[in-house]
Image (spheres, rainbow, N blue to C red):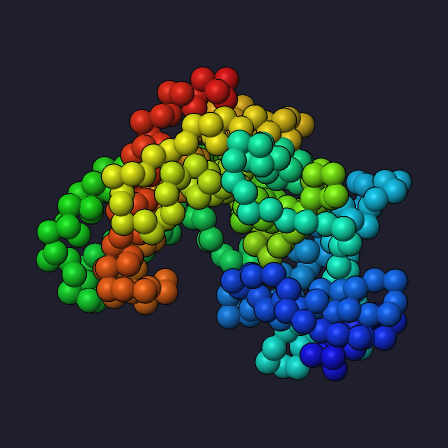
Length: 353
């Protein structure tokens, strides 16, 4: 690890390297030095992010643009991530031909929280909205680090292909038939984002696409410093950042809780997140984006239900499972959340205004 870290323009001598955080995608390490800064060393998961050059291009462009926006801020180095260049290439990653690594400056005195309550949901809405606002006028062209990541039309096609192939012989199960009959009537409505985009009435923005409370850094006084974990940042509909947060934060139980009858959509979380998000995006959000935010809150549990369900039909080839019906349990849970959200759309519309 020390040899890998020394490919980057680190100031000072490396004293220690140890694991950092609990990320599920990349391997993350803290590099302690005797210099002015400590650093974060990450092994990029290039089985998920197959185009590392594009990945780092997106991040480099976005962080440079945010840095220009924050010029003159005395705390700028804690409000935008700083990635070090590789000594040999000048790029913000190094590869041995198989593995890919990057180094960023460790943000001192910063904290993350796991708490999902109205207070932190408001912070999340405002911070992710402000993040989108800062990047709304970025002059660079950014690409999709995971192509079609939140494309509902693609997910619907994948479900139909799974049903037709019936690779695991599960289509004969009565529950599978019942869930399919429940999901299909909503398919056309849930695919409307892609249609609106083709009609030219819905724009794509630079979105974070992994909106979680723990992807924000807070200072010692509880103020949000910056947004982190930028790997999924890419062109998408604002529905991605709005709906994906609520899918997990507004569910009364975990997404794989088998007690689906306990699933409900928490309106206090919706109201707090929406309030913050509308404040953060006030400078650019169009009327059609705003009026479809309740749709986004319904879209993401529907999309995730479709993905879990297709994987179950395919024989559990994508998501890791802990027991045979795990994906079916997840599907029931998300279908219940979808229906709970749909029932509260009138309330959501009143809140959005």
